[in-house]
Length: 382
Image 1 (tube, rainbow, N blue to C red):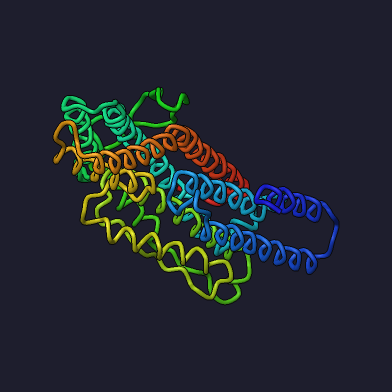
Image 2: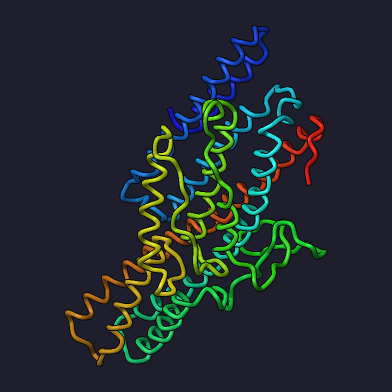
C-alpha cells in the first residue's frame, strides 16, 4: 500500500469510528490505536526515504519531492487525530494549552523557511543556465580556442556562484528574499514557476540557520502518561516539520546558513525515530564536510555539477588547439554528465518549487484550523 492509500485508509478509519456511539473507554482505546497507526506510518515512510534508489539519491531533487510528500501525508493524518470530531474544550486544557501554541509558532517559522527555500531554488536555476552556456560552447565540433574561452568564463562564474558565501546572499541574480508573514504592505508576483507567492520582503539580517535553531528550542519529548496519549503525535509532528525544514535548508541555497545545527535530539527508543535519526546523521555528516567550503547546498545535483565543472575548468586551462584526443574524449564525458544534470534540473526545479508552495499552503490552512478550534475552546492565543 503506497503513502496516499495509507492516508486515505487512515482518515476513513477515524471518520467512521468517531461517528459511532461508543463508551468512553472504547474511544480512548481506539484513540491509542490511531496514534500507534500514525506512528507506524511515519516509521514506514521514513524507512523508504532512508533507502532510496539510484535515481533518488538522498537530497536529490526527486528525493526532496518525496520528502515533501511524506510531510503532507503525515500532516493530514496528524490533523485528523487531533481535530476530527473532537470537543474543542479538550484541547484547551493542559498540556495542550502549551503544546499547541508551540506547534503553531513553529509553523510560522516553517513558512518563512519555505519562502526562503523557494527563492533559493532560483539560485540553483541560475547555476543551471551557466552550465548550459558551457555545454553549448564545448559541444561544438571541432572545439576551437574561442569556444573554450567562452566555456571557461561560464564555468568560472558557475563555480563562483556555487561557492558564494551565504553571508553575502546566495546569488546576485536570485529573486528577492521573502517573509511569509511580513510587516510591510504589498504582495509580489513571481515569474519563475508561474505561480503567485504569498510572501513579503525579508530583512537582510534574516538567518536560515537561526530560524532552524529557534524551531528546535524547547523541543521536549513527552514523558510518563503523556508519552502514549495525544501529546505524543504532537511531538512527532513537531519533529517531522523541523526535520523537513532542516533538510531543505541544508540542500538548497538559503540566506545565511552559517552555524546550521547538525543535530536535534530525538529519543532513539521511539518506534518511528530510527530511520529519521539515520537520515539526520547522514545529512549532518555531509554538511560538516561541506560547510567550511561555502558550498551553495547539499543538493545532489549541485554537488555533481561542481565536480563536472571543476574537471572541465582543468580541461580548458590546459587546452591547446586542436586538442589532445584523449583529453577531448574525457572532456566529452564530463559535458555529457553536465548535460544530464541540467536535464534533471530543467524537469525538476519548477515542480519542486510548486511542491514547496503546496507545503506552505497546507501549513497555513492547518494553522488556521487549529486556531479556529482553540478559539472555540476559549484557549487564549497570542
